[in-house]
Amino acid sequence: MRVQRIDVFHVAMTLRAPFRTSFGVTHERHCLLIRLEADGVEGWGEVVADAAPLYSEETVETAWHILRDFLVPAVLGRSFDSPREFRASYAHVRRHPMAKAGLEGAFWDAWSRARGLPLWRALGGTKDRVEVGVSIGIQEDVPALLRAIESFQAQGYRRFKIKIEPGWDVDVVREVRRALGDIPLMVDANSAYTLADASHLAQLDRFDLMMIEQPLAHDDLVDHAELQRQLRTPICLDESVHHADDLRKAARIGACRILNVKVGRVGGLTEVQAIDRLARQLGIPLWCGGMLETGIGRLHNVALATLPGFTLPGDTSGSDRYWLEDVIDPPVTVDPDGTIAVPQQPGIGHQVREDRIQRVTRRRATYRANGAA
Ligand code: OSB
Ligand code: MG
Image 1 (cartoon, rainbow, N blue to C red):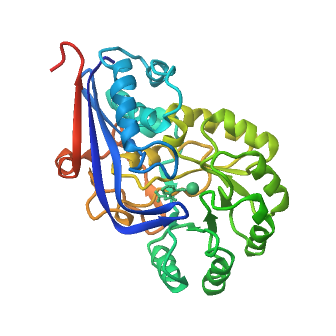
Image 2 (spheres, rainbow, N blue to C red):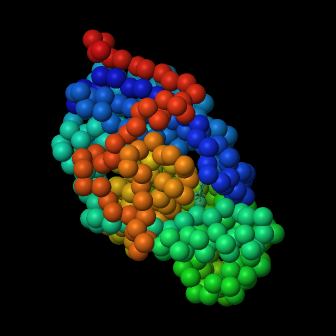
């Protein structure tokens, strides 16, 4: 398929409720949406970088620059037979995984549409429903947290992840267990602790959490291995794992027993396939993480969560958990049994509403191959 045209939209969408983690509060989600046209077929991808470099070093601004000056020139006007060939054309660019993942995602969508295949089938997915959990930000107080969990419980969500930080951790988990009993519960620290907190974190062991996500530094594996030796609760890594080889090393030293997979963090769906294969060999369960995506990134997440190694509920909550109006039609919905039905139409499977995207667009760039309209 010859890449004829690429459009990059910098959008800003207001969340229905602010989302607070140990690294900051998000009221308005900035990201880039990418429309790619190849052989007259369109595909859509999402760059999940945020306005500020708090989760990782990338921002919408760095992604805009890397796309304009390096990634788009590497693919525009060229022909590719597969997503693997597509990504090889810019493999010389180091890091910037979110910029790469957004572009590769747009190509995957176009490529699977051109073949009449749903994206999840093109990826090698094996399920037609995925199990869904929800990630709940740090709240004002415990009653507010309990109300939030109960309302998601009523909607069917199958797993509850609460964000923790020093001062909002052991006591809060104790209150949740006391009020709500044996619900499927986990915590995510987003790197808010150090090894010096090991005995404090070990107090979580008595609450039978499914896992503790990324307790230590964003760039650490070794200390996580040391911490895991002191904890019964399984450690799940997020920020520290950037590709399959990181997972191999993490598993080798015992830095995690579970992995959160985000397509933006690992640089694209082709790398997710490699991680899926390796994780099954290693016996490490996977689940699909989230980055407060618009419907476009959300549909990519639903597709990757159908891969066979993804055996735990993911953070692929319904569109209505984030947005009053999503940029796709229909929105992604969670059924009362806590699952999402995987689309059966070609590509990402729902209609992209460019009219709605235009209403939230701050700036747009269009790149055309020579001779393309
Ligand atoms: O650490 O998983 C995380 C959101 C933004 C940045 C990092 C994280 C998150 C979430 C929300 O936990 C997941 C979602 O609902 O999209
Ligand atoms: Mg996380």
